[in-house]
Amino acid sequence: MSDTEISAVLRRAKFIVGGIVGALLTGAVIVLVLRSFQADALETSTALHARRYVTTIMPAAAGAGQPLTLPGTLLGVLESTLYARSNGYVLRRVKDIGSSVKKGELLAEITAPEIDQELSQAVSSRAQAAAGAELAKSTADRWQALQQKDAVTQQDLDERLGAYHQAAANLAAADANVRRLQKLQGFNQVVAPFEGVVTRRNVDVGDLVNAGNGGTGQALFAIAQVDPLRLYAYVPQAYARQIKIGAVATVTLAERAGEQYLGSVARTAGAIDATTRTMQVEIRVPNPTGALIAGSYVQVTLLINADTEALLVPTNVLLFRPEGTRVALVDSDGRVHLTTVKLGTDFGTDVEVLSGLKASDRMVLNPADSLADGDMVTLPAQQARAR
Image (cartoon, rainbow, N blue to C red; front, side, top):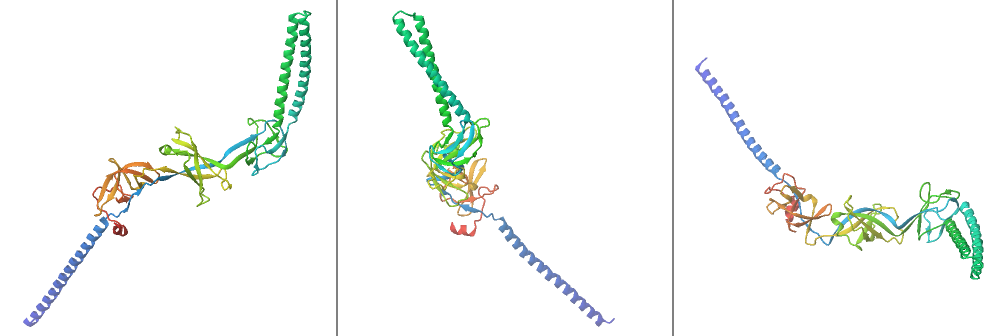
């Protein structure tokens, strides 16, 4: 191979090596640039994910009162279950369920042959006792006149007077027995004890009924006075002292959304039940149109007087820490400050804050347990603009 050819080969080799080195250098530059871009993106992403986004809320004024809603059942202001007072058969029935009745109005009539026979026997026994008493009286009168003439002894007169007094006592006993049976016979007329509505009827014509409500005694009718209605609510101990007689109560039914019926507190038990830690409260609800039905399950709302200087916050802003109950406040720079608060009355979803909070403070809603004093947080755009 000539020197010229060797030189040409060397030049080509240099070209190839130079190209390879240039390609490697270009690749290295590209890799370095890409790594720089990726590092910037990772740093941006890390910073973005490191941000803690929170939603804040401001406390509200407690106002004049907060609603306390309790369950209850509507009952007639008067309710009575009627039983037979004598054994017999139902002769006729005058009223049925849903019938409006006046006080003393006939509901049903019972026939009691045994009572009728006992009354007839008692009347006859009374007549016998009256005849014996009359004879004993006339005899005592005659012997008293004879004794004044010393025709009989004092002992004989005392015996006749004793016989008269015994006969008079027998007559009084016979009179009492007749009156008892007459009263008992009067119970054959089953009448309404007060004005109301028949809510239950358990007998029909021909049914055998027994006296009393014990043993096999069967209730004949149930009557309720449905205007006004009453209901009993059981107020927790924490609110018991705030319930006053005459306070307004609002009654609602689940099946009548939007309708409200006003009542008032008629009386309270004045004592806490040691088992349930509640106080029984009776509420009267006017029902002139009959829109409410006795026995209905309802919700009754009472207004509980709140501290007008206190603030009201939702319970899901509270943090329970060993240092006490706290809330997480967010300042204008987005920094968290944990502050201890003193709580007042618990209204269920809301609670009073008596101290440790101002009306202008922004509280973190649903704060994480890991939230610490001094943490930086980010607010949603709309809340950031509203600050």
